Length: 146
Image 1 (cartoon, one colour):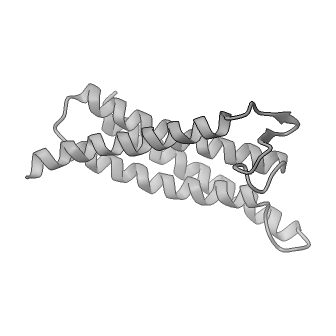
Image 2: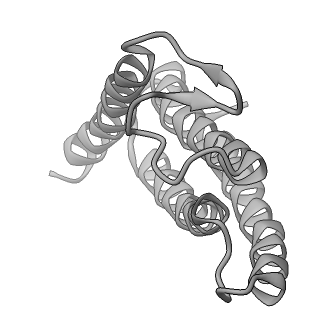
């Protein structure tokens, strides 16, 4: 598999997740007294759609970049891995209705309290992987077009 294939397949999965969570969001809206879905159902829906289009952008950057495939594949893989883990976390919080702010202590998933610093570590890894992975692809584009 090359980086473009990984990015386009990821875009399809994220878009499908966005469509399906849109149905979930709609169902919660019409059955809720407030007329709103749980915040993390809404976030999951929106993030899935946004990450789908972000993955399409990765396809184009990987296409233009002429870096070795293994470097592009690692870069795209890092970015889409963290897109996917974010969507999964939003989905779980929406399903469990356990928080309205996953970044506010105490950090829990359902009734399980996460170790101190786990969320901060995850967020710094996400930041490094998403920005770093994209910067590698962007570098590949820049050296190709300049």
